[in-house]
Length: 393
Image (cartoon, rainbow, N blue to C red; front, side, top):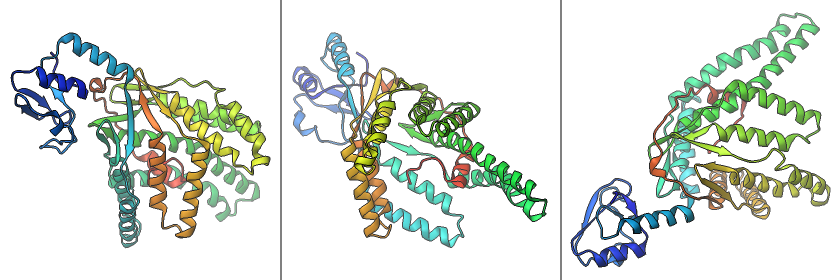
């Protein structure tokens, strides 16, 4: 019988009832072996934790009285009905403490500690995100972010400053000054997609689960073309192209994302959000704009529901009402505390998203192999410089 196969309570009971010899089990995380004597009481073990790594115990039998047919039938049933829930254990108070220290040390170091502070916040938030009993980890460091920022200043900041200010300082004439400012604006527009795509590349390369790194392998040039085309068509169509643009962008992001050697897939259709977008737009005057919360909920659900890994698919149950309540609550907290409640706002937002997210369908997580991709923090530095991209904290 193959080792390290997990079993539900009913099969555990059968094993313990049938075995006339001690049963050997192993922790599903650290693989430490334990021996159960004959007649061991199952109820006393249900809520136990591994004595070595303190992980809540999942039964993993190394030898048992189950037949190979029973094992195969169990694994087939488990794969077809498996629902994996994500959970978030972070606390606003803990994040508040981290951010208070970050602010103090950033002031004391004249801003230098800012990059190490970002790492501390991300590391905490990702470490509180759990799937299948194991938590995500962030492996970036402050030195990488600082160097990335300095490189971004050289790559972007210097050309922008020269184009925008130098013609005026040298009194080169109005036409040259206007041309310089136009070129500087073009530099901003061109570098925004560079920052977005390379931020994703860096963040995923420094994120891991069960020691397996995520990665992003999309082409920067390809995304620049996609972004500029989408931006132009959105402006020309007065926003009508926006729902198509975000679908194309999400397809690019998801389809080039990996965990180890397993590739994510996105199978949404380019017109998938157009109807919801049009409805939200038409209802805007009658709902004082609140109809957009239902569109944003639809968009998040659509993105997740069409994201797959292997034969498993994510499912999201975010609602417009829930999203509206979340944002109104967050706004009230920020106003009443003059912004001091920001850590609680971050925690509330992450918890709401993950509480409404599951991964459903067959997926053998044990078969995912490491296939790490290196990435520079320059994109992360550009994102900080341009204030683009996304962040946990």
